[in-house]
Image 1: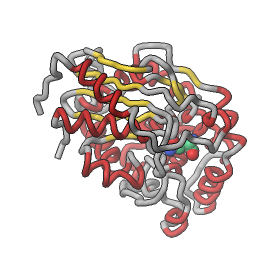
Image 2 (image 1 turned 180 degrees about the horizontal axis):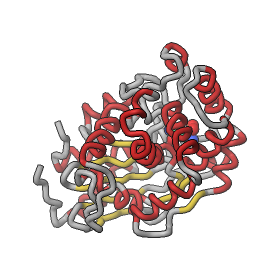
Image 3 (image 1 turned 180 degrees about the vertical axis):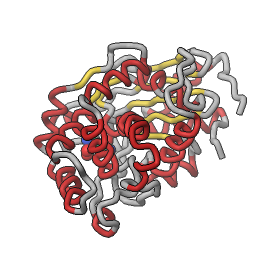
Image 4 (image 1 turned 120 degrees about the horizontal axis):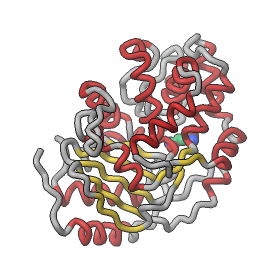
Length: 309
Ligand code: GLN
């Protein structure tokens, strides 16, 4: 792929953001009070290209709760520690079920379908808690390093709120524990999982942090190898098949990019050999994906011809 950003990328993004504001469906996540209070009219779109340019419109420097986008960061560290052994404990198949579904987990004997749904990310959190002496610092310092900035923080209210309203995630964790697929203490594992969901970043932070996935595992800005080429390909494959939960098929069909969403309203999409698109708008569709974010990424990918297929 050799797509160059048009010189008029900024006006194009402006136009796309304006059009997305016309999307009025969707509802801000309300499973925890801390997220229910977020203003629904935030809207941001950033494109970071491999040559180092970052183009943004809207609230692109406002930090928000990245939620499930953090599943990428946890997975990177777990892949580094367990390598092939990880795939005995979590599968690499799309689930076709909502992100917090529990039904398949019992049928499949406590082995989650993939690391992008909650059960899979809780399993990954177990690997981190069991294999890192300080799993939270390991994640935080990696993410800060990826952004080359200390601006990445954790929203303590969101973290606390997740713990208080975490019954379903606790059910997933205990079910895995009952099948012998969780090594560490369940409360510790859940605490790590909720903590990483509460990381706050802006679309500019996210786009820059994930640029290595568009560049075969190497950070295009520092030249540092973040993952191997093979692991970057594997992460992108998982994002393509599972990153948008049970809307991943539709996303592949209409957009055609590896992507990950979070219930904070953020979405990142990887454009191999080009860069990263990051969008944020809090109201969610029924799949838990940002309604305006989906529309912005679809519109941009279609207008620039970015589908990998
Ligand atoms: N904290 C959320 C949960 O565990 C994350 C889910 C998401 O962003 N899809 O339910």
